[in-house]
Image 1: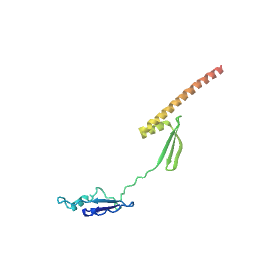
Image 2: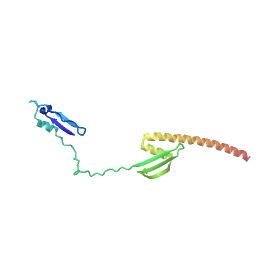
Image 3: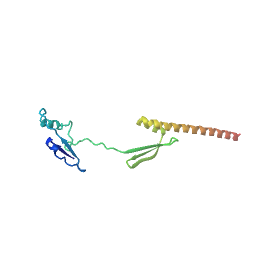
Image 4: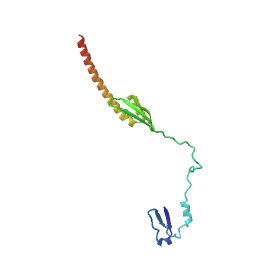
Length: 155
C-alpha cells in the first residue's frame, strides 16, 4: 500500500490514479496557524512508545517447553438394554475396541467429567434399568407358570 501526503500547495495538483493492484491513501495537511506548535513536537507524540515486558525476537527466544497436544478419542456407546462399550483411538491408531464396561462406571465417569454429561447418560441408564426390571418381572411370571405346570405333572 502506498501513502501519499500532500501539503497545502500540492492540494491543487492532480491526485495520482488508483490502480486495482495498489491502494493509494491521500491526506491533506492544513497550513499551520501561528498559535499552533511547530511540527516537531507532533512528531514526538506520534513516535511509538516502548512496550512493557521483554522484547520478542530471536535473541530473546523463550526457553519454556512448548505444550504437546495429544489427540485421544474415547467413544462410549450404550444400548437400550444397558450394555455399554468403549473404544479408544490415539490419532489414527486404535488402542482399544469393543471393551465392555458396566453402566455404573459410565455413570460415575460422566459425573466426574461434567454435570451436562451425567444428566442425559443417567436418563439412558435409568430407562435401561426400567426396561430390564420389566423384563425380569415378565420372566418371573413365566417362571411361576412353569413351576405350577411342573407341580401339576408331579402329582
